[in-house]
Structures are given as structure tokens and as C-alpha cells.
Length: 511
Image 1 (spheres, rainbow, N blue to C red):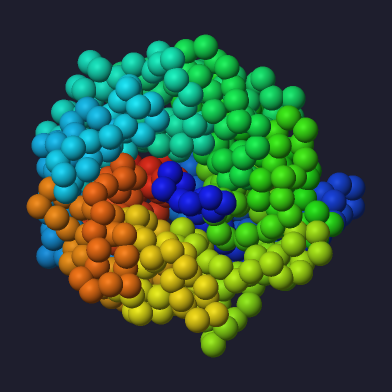
Image 2 (cartoon, rainbow, N blue to C red):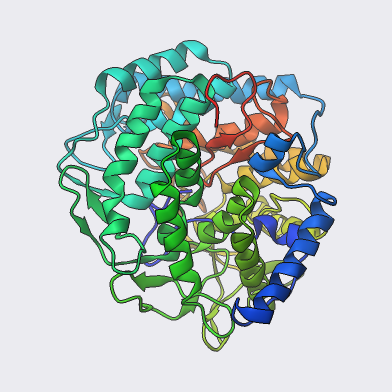
């Protein structure tokens, strides 16, 4: 999940990950007194129904020896397809190594490179993004090459403003996942150094909601107005880092930011999109539901329940998803979508939908998988129409509003999650369709590149391979077909950026 190439005012991904697990329970009003107790009781009943009496999912389940129900421990691998997916990842990786090694991102058509965070200071973003993908695919020589580069070259003492959200999900998350996979202390050391440099964005804010940018050398924070996803997508990476290091500052900062958002919901239990972190006031009135730039805020509420058994985050997630279902879900020609509405009144604003919203997934399993499956089918209709999903559509006619495709991974992510939960071969079939179209339209001699117009034939190519491509697209596809020996399909958990934060098998790092 990343917003780097999205046009204003939109930005990045997902939500209903556990809507199914909560059974879509309706919880409204303040989370206090009897109302809060009832909300917790109902959410607890739903969680117990989804997981079995007494079972707790995610990392907690791993520690208690219990699997997340619905996740299949083993399934038959399709080695031929997994091998082809792995070969295409290697093709893209070799292009990065040839043209951009040590830099943030590759321009595979022109054979050049570019930096993502600071124009004159690369941080090897694609290297960090690729770490756990390389590990899962058992490309160990490449893992060692990456670890060596990080140990020898990566330095976050940079006099430049880094975007806190992107740095957290991509750099902190990537280094964490790499450490959990390999046990290499250099990765953990760089991770904690970076997290310490990001913390002033939280601690200098009067509301506890982080500023958008922080200078990694001086600690000066800036950018007071930002989307809720950027404010609230920190708890998984910071929570795991606190668990590993024993330093609670990271998790406390993330929890305070989450609470500040929740306290500013409307009487409908909806959130607008952007907040001023100094005044605590909303900068707009549009509830975009599963669309960016609100998506991963919801995802991380459910993730905090799965990873840390945080009942409060579970209750908040249940409350918000019930409100989104009530006020924003609608069907057009039999397809499920989520309209944008005024967060105070519920009145319609528009019917736009972002490709980043595809990953509306039942990550926790449960009794309401049908809703997530329906939304996936809606986006499969878009895939069928265009072969490659455009960045943004008007869902009333499936008309492309933005004709670009920036190598978004969300459809492959959703296919994996639904296959993981159900075992329905439909999800492998559609994932393979996505892969074949990806290979047909995005592949170039130097790797893989974005498209500038998916409505043309042949589809017009750009010249950019975003770093998140190495973290996500091929990883989701590989996990779908490979029955990967290094991933624990019972207990695993991946972040919004596709980083494995729990569930490595035969790994050296311990969470």
C-alpha cells in the first residue's frame, strides 16, 4: 500500500479485512459506559464465533499454539505456476540490479533510476522492499547481497524531510520483516535508528497525531494536514518493534494517534478524510470508506486485534465497519461498491472507486466472507473489461477516470487472502489471469513498468517500477500458488505493504 503516485486528492488502501470476522455487527454511539460494554460484548461474541471459544488469532495465537481458523495449513502447490511467477520476479529484480542498485527505484525502460524520499540521498528502498520476498522465494544469495548493502551503505542521518507514513510501512516494516526472516542484527539496528528519528513527528504534535514529514537529522516536523490512513497506519510496525526491543515508546505513540482519530468520528460513526494534527479539526467532510486515503487505518485496527489481542481496536473496527456497511455500501448492476458520502449526514458525494480499494479482505475469516467475495467480483469485472485495472473508475459504468496503472498489488493481495481463507479455485484462476495480463502488458526487457493508458491497444507504457512492486505483486501471487515452505499459512500476518510481520518458518529472528 502506498500513495506515492496517486493524484490529489486521493491516496492508498483497504478496510473490510475483518468485517467478515465481526459478522458486520452494528455498534453505534460513544464507546463509553454501558454502550462500550455492550459493544465489547458483541464484538467478543463475534470474535469467539469466528475463532472458536477461547481462541485468539494472529501472533497471540502463534504464542498459544492456536491457528487462525479458516486459514489452511496446507494446500496443493502448483509448482509450475509458482516457478513462472518466481522467474518473473527475478526478471524484474535483475533489471533493478542492472540499472539502479543502491538507489530507491528503477526506470526500466530508459535504464535509469530515481530516489523516492530525498532526491540526493538514496536509501535503497527497493532493496528493503524486496528483502522478505527474496527470503520467501529462497533466493538466499540475493538476500545476503541486500543485507550486505544495508550493513555497509544504509545511513538515515539525512538532512531531508521524509514522509512518516511511507517511511513506516516501507522502511521500518521492510527492515523489521527482514530481521524476522534472517536474524541479522544490522537490520534491527537500522530499523530502531529510523524509528527513533520518526518519533518526533508524533511527540511534537499537540494531539498525538503525527505530522506528515520529519527531518531525519534535525527532528523538525512539518505538514499539519494529512489523511487518516497516514495518521493511523503505524500500530503494526511500531507494535512489533516494541515487542522485539522492549521499548514501549513506539507502540504508545501509534496507539495515541489511533485514539485521536476515533475520538473525532461523527455521530454516524463515520470519518472524514483529512485532519489537521495541530488543531484536531477535519479539513474536509468526505467519508471515502474502503478507498484511499482512509483504507489502511481500518485495516490496522483489525491487525492490532490479531497481532496484539487489542480488544479496544477490535471494538473500534467493529463500530466503523458497521457504519460503513450501513451508510456507504451499495450495489449497481449486481456489483458491490462503496460510495463516498458526507461523514456527518451520509449524503452522497460521488461514486468514484480507487484501484487501491480492491483489497477489501476478510483477513480474520469468519461468517461474512460473502461481502468480501462480492467486492472482489466487482473488481474482477473491471479486470475483465480492461485486462489491467485502471487507477480509478466511475463504478456506475465501470468507466476509467484515471487510465493509468501504477502496478498496484491490491487485486493479487485480495486473491491470495480469499484463496487462503476459502480454498475456492476461483481465486487461483483469477489470480492467474491477473498474472498473465501483468506479464503481457507490463513486462519490458529491463523489468516491469507502469502503464499510462490501459484503454489503448497496445497499452501505453511509462518508465517507472515503484519499489513496492518488489514487496507485493509477485509475493502475493507466489504465496497463492507455491505453498511456500518458509511461510506459516496458519499463523502468518502481512502488513499493508505486504511485509511478513508474523509467521516465518525456519527463520532466525524472533518476534
